[in-house]
Image (cartoon, rainbow, N blue to C red; front, side):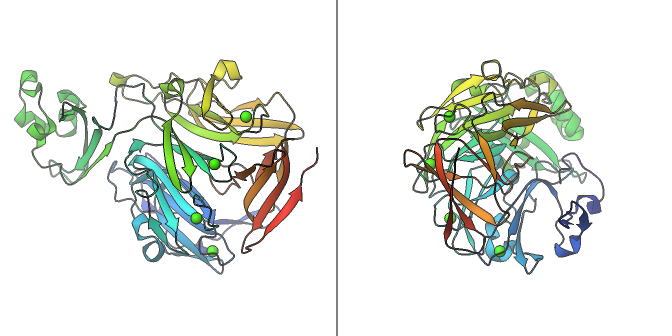
Length: 451
Ligand SMILES: [Ca+2]
Ligand SMILES: [Ca+2]
Ligand SMILES: [Ca+2]
Ligand SMILES: [Ca+2]
């Protein structure tokens, strides 16, 4: 799947499908897929056309060797009797090349029992695609999530206020680095072949006083396009205070994107329209990647465990490594309080990436991967939770709490930053019963929980 720095032959980034024969043996059945080519972070499944089988969405991340060119294919793959066909152009034309997507999930944000799609990425708004009965319609303006464009990494779906609709946390770059962005002073990225040598050149700018200035020094830019910059700027003082327009004229106008929001965000669902709030200030000290929901203190509200940091920034900009993982403690459905890695025990000072929550016997574990470092496993100190395996054909779940509130649950179908929980729900004694909806069925099945 992932091949972010890949420059080789296309056959090696062609997707494959392996079918499990039920005893843990896999068979290559790629012939069930159309030609799906690309470097991807995220694949998720749902029965979007409601014909009783699971379909797929494959989100395109980058065009290898051509960052940040957005000519990157994403694929909506419709299951037709066990064979997948490329239904992107017919059912979701807006998702043919939706941008540099870091995570995409199927999620029913408007509670009409039809799975919608939600996408986040680099220099993209928070994209909601409403399922209108087997077709997808771009509705980010209606959901009020269109005007924030970030370097978004991942989505954590959770019903944080126990009102039966899904809310979301979106992780981002954070607000503690050399590069800053806001609504008034966005960061831009550009790509074009300035010097006509057949290779994509890319540039970035920041905004100050309404003007765009290059983010990189003359030396750095002269390395990318030596002839162009060398002819135009023979001294450092001639480069001083030059705007992007001074340097490039209109050469970069066609291929550009912007980011105006680097904060991690909470999206509270109000009938399919979102109220957007930043996460607490301390969480904005670095980028966040892996996130999972779990009621760590058993107060009947879902909390969030997460990791983050990125040491692989440009030397001149310094590493983004001020976060040490931690917990977002739900304040009775009204927001979150940050417990850092030391306070919470979930201490992850490295470069956190994937994260899952799982269970073994009576214990709940959080497992975090780290870039170029060990996988870390943490045990939840209390053993008041138990996890319930759900059947493969369960597609939606609602928990009824002892106080009568109804919480919508995530039945995992590919959510998580480059990682995925197994198909289980973790419950504790705040929960009285669970209702499940099965693939191809309109009705719900109930399951009482006993402790
Ligand atoms: Ca289907
Ligand atoms: Ca829906
Ligand atoms: Ca909710
Ligand atoms: Ca809690």
